[in-house]
Amino acid sequence: MSARKIIIDTDPGQDDAVAILLALASPEEIDVLGITAVAGNVPLSLTAKNALIVCELAGKPNVKVFAGCDRPMGRMLVTAEHVHGETGLNGPVLPEPQMALQEQHGVDFIIDTLRAHEAGTVTLCPLGPLTNIATAFEKAPDIIEKVQEIVLMGGAYFEVGNITPAAEFNIYVDPQAADIVFKSGVPLVVMPLDVTHKALVTKPRNEAFRALGTKAGVAVAEMTDFFERFDREKYGSDGAPLHDPCVTAYLINPELFSGRHINVEIETQSELTMGMTVADWWGVTDRAPNALFIGDLDADGFFSLLSERLARL
Ligand SMILES: [Ca+2]
Image 1 (cartoon, rainbow, N blue to C red):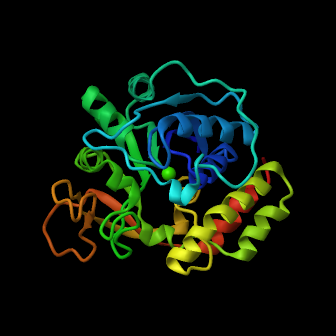
Image 2 (cartoon, rainbow, N blue to C red; image 1 turned 180 degrees about the vertical axis):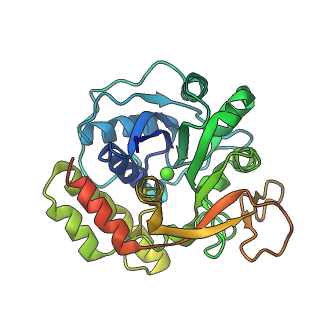
Image 3 (tube, protein in one colour; image 1 turned 120 degrees about the horizontal axis):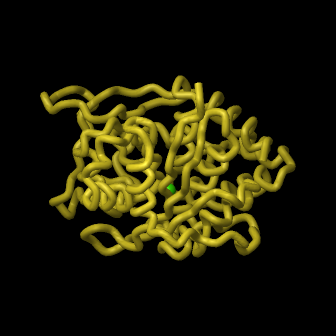
């Protein structure tokens, strides 16, 4: 089987960084056509720069990186420095990037790439708010039916919310964009908090990253050291959840994950529950399924895949 062509849409973010490293370390399964940055965890100027830093950390300076939208479609930008630090990549000391951003806007790159490829051959992998994807769909509706699949991190059902009591961060930041994507008809695979909170970097798992002794392995260990403090205080958990790498791990080995094909709708009206993913996990409505909503993973398999691949960088 040839490598799956993907566009990574991202707001790095330490866990985005690990997701990107995993993709770039896995050329047999994943062909990264480009990376588009979006405002989210930190403002766009930083997410775009961080995407460059991560490509260089991976030793892949030829990856094309584009800046996309700098704010959500209909709301003020909400960021998460309280989780990720001022730069979004706090933890390791990484050099200023030598690579330059591409001149084209990230949204136009998404549109042109889908138009240039045969239908059903390009997968979109959003790891942040869905602003770039929804903006591309609004600007060029002809591309929607060309998308093979969208595999995204966002939402929650059993874990409910992490930025408000009702909403997960990526969906909350741009619920309007999420609504467009979830109603688009494109096959969706969703990695909600329900599964990502099971991908915990425990101490032995973090030591395994550090023990790789490579630049990337040590940087990943230092990144998780940084945001682990936040999660330990907030959830009292054993370690930090690696949200976004669930997306790229799924592309490499979907058998690590299990879920249900269900209807998922986005709350866009109520301020109290804004950005909630209303997931019909129990099948209590007759609304048509629109997403494979993941609920569980083989955590040990996930972390051994991650260590094995990071060792290559
Ligand atoms: Ca992210």
